[in-house]
Image (cartoon, rainbow, N blue to C red; front, side, top):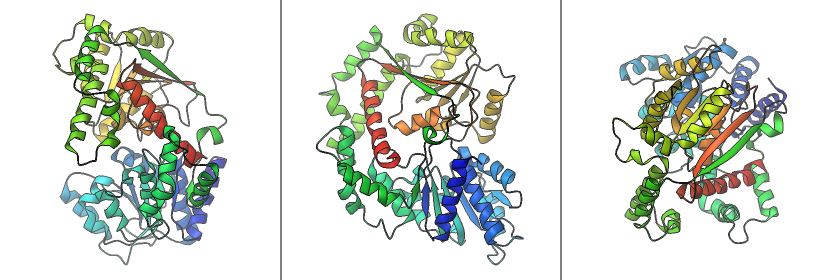
Length: 471
């Protein structure tokens, strides 16, 4: 373990000995998994507490948890609880039907690894077990106190709770409160009080409105969070980590894109009204209509062919709408770089696949339809030393978690996510421990369009997290 990971491990021990729950909020790629596994090993070997421990993770990271637990805790029995077949899961549940045997060295299992979907589907079975530790990986999955999974997990019988997330604030302070209430419901009991004290002032500061939060208020909030949350960033603890350079590439719309964009603009009174979703309540039917328009604007910026996908796109259209890639990719290929390209829309990924084939670029594609086995095979293929794959095309939401792609030293965002943490998680597939080359991130943005507004709003959200969590 690295020195900062040992500090994190000791912090987790301190939480346990004080009877506290906590949030390990280290930035992505700093080894939250190994610090947590060290805690479980310590509990077994030093405290003779052999579980049962529950690890809940996104489907994309379950295999990594299972393999890392087997690697670093061979003395523990780990079972992966997943699969669509209810009968197979029923057989696995027989392992915990005898509660007397659980928590001993000879128990049928010590750690159970599952995903958020099955927590909801098999809720009643998980509630029968008294868990020693419940660990939630990518805990931003319970960022909403109104969500079903938040309510279900809050009702589990467990002695300790640990949340792992590199992004405790993704959009608003309300999400941070949901996590804090989950670990310390007695202390953070009132959402209205929390938001009244901090949320409005902080979010006003990030948006450049009003007086915002003064330094005394901000420091008070940070002191409140300090006992329950540990946050380190790469720049703070990894002197040896290679640099990351981010470059925004702004390109004008083509004449055809401008035609469609102006046509859509006539359907709204102003871009500001379109994007200021605070004007409308969540139940307002107009909100759905406006968000549909936002998606149409984004489609125009991506590629007009998304509207009417044809079986064949001419090379002239590739040159017209993907000209920036025509300039960028050949240069990267000639210099020996390997590229991760992230995209929001599967239809755009279809078009990019056609383009890669036309330009004879070797590539792999990973989106939400890929199975766990396919994901593992593609990652291994790309990471292999003798791999000739030049581009790994991934959807941001499906490919931004749970995979190590340090064979790539270049990241291209064809379009950006509303949530800056989604893009941050995506670029950290390459910029992480094990990377030996400088990582360059290219973000493609259409000039004078909704994409610039999205990027601006994303920076505001990121600023909230920097103020509150990083200090």
